[in-house]
Image 1 (cartoon, rainbow, N blue to C red):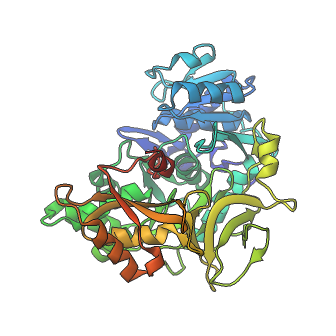
Image 2: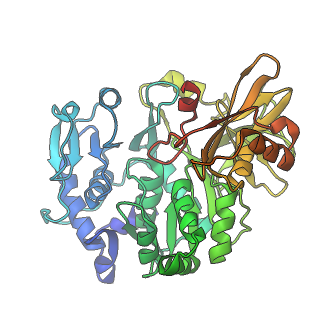
Length: 491
């Protein structure tokens, strides 16, 4: 397939009437999506770059597809981005136009840009034109990182990387044009936009976006012909809570039946706690599978549809992806007991950070491996387990390397714990001490700190015992449900 979205080469016959995307009551066929995106592509063909006000709507899909048709790099914008961060992204990416829905109220920072209105209900029908056969290395999207270590950086994603990742997932998951995907993910990030929108469109399949996530919506769509569900751990945790509820009645039964009937349940963007894996499997007989990727690398690993699901792992490297573990001094590590930084290379990698050759160079080794900053292990079958971020999840205490994730999983299995995060904090004796941040299942009667510490020590090892336990009303999370551990340190 030479085109990034070959299914959008103006469809004819039955293909034109096949549903491409659905958002609530609004549905677009492939013929309608092709017509709307072709008309919009003609309006932005002279743009250097375009910003896309990436709401969870059909307008965002049309905008991104139009940019791909026109060969114009698109910069998805999170509508919830703060004023200072938005100003930085706009100054860095320098779009010449912003694509937005007719009812979108744009912030002042976007007022100087030419506004191009995208309306999924009323679009101009023009003569069909083939999509641009752009260079595979041409930028398709510029997606900004979360900026946890400074201002967000724009990862330039070429068409080659998007195609390589989506085709690797086709191989791993048996993804076909017959699949109907359900999700409620935001459309300004890799997970929801590239996997969740461009994935189905590259295959010729369909997307049903829930708008706002709910167990009822998941049950309804999976129970009416959808075959795949994409979500983040927070979403699967909420599904597990419904499945686990005493006296859940019809809602619980309908959800269990719908999940059991899905071809594929996929979790990503953060680790899914083992406790939630087990609760969903017990209620449905189906296993959630995980994959591992980043903005800069797209997808690196994934449990195969025909493989063995192993809760707590993210599967082996995908087709075309090389992966290795490296010690801090650069030594390449081998063996199932080895724990080190994950480095990857392959056709799935980004081109670099926009306007940041220094950061691009620092993120790569001399021989082309990308330094993910994630720490993990690889077992004898090649399955990767993510320990966590090198900066926040690898705790060096008393001469031991401790992964925060395994402690979090044990804490979450305690009946008195609803949510948990583990960090390392400076300790004059140990170097770092293990600190747990806990949301109690019953805030009025939380478990004792000593009880939780003993629970961890009994399940794992004494040196992994939390030395301090903080109880919170809620853990700070970003839009993708990831726990913002730096906020815990700051608190």
